Image (tube, rainbow, N blue to C red):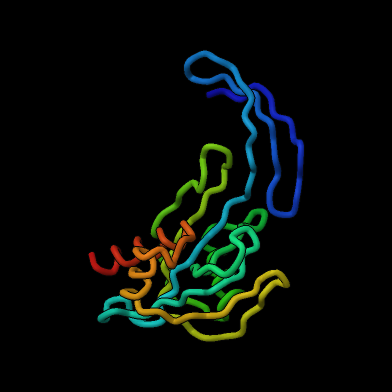
Amino acid sequence: MTLKASRRVYTGRVISLDVDTVAFPNGTVGELEMVRHPGASAVVPFLDDPAGEDPRILLIRQYRHASGGYLFEIPAGRLDEGESPEKCAIRELREETGYSAATLEHLSSFFTTPGFTDERIHVFMAIGLEPGDQALESDEILDLHPTRISEALKRVSTGEVVDAKSMLGILLSARRIRA
């Protein structure tokens, strides 16, 4: 695919919207609406040693207007300009939960919805947590929920956790600690 032209039609606080004219691999040319996003990092914070039996992770229960209510999630947030995914993960963990981590391990990176956005989320596992103070933004309405990894997995399988980055983070971290 070759980008022939791009036209910005909207710029907001979180996203921008471009209309791209592209030449596709099959030789056709078309227009695509593309939501531009700087990317994000998400963190599965382990309150206990991951090598222990059924360690606890820290979920957040956060109000999300788009979903019409509260969702169970892992801490996450948007990358600031020039910020590495690791620095973003450390910052978001501290801001949303108050915790800092001794060790951060990258689990995966993925595109959220590649049909219309370039948003990529980097998922990390945080170990060796030290408590501190939260620094929530005005639109972050959340509370902390220490949860056994077995319970988090159950919440994923029963549909109580429906946020994709959180589902993937929980599943990947459970696989990692059981490997």
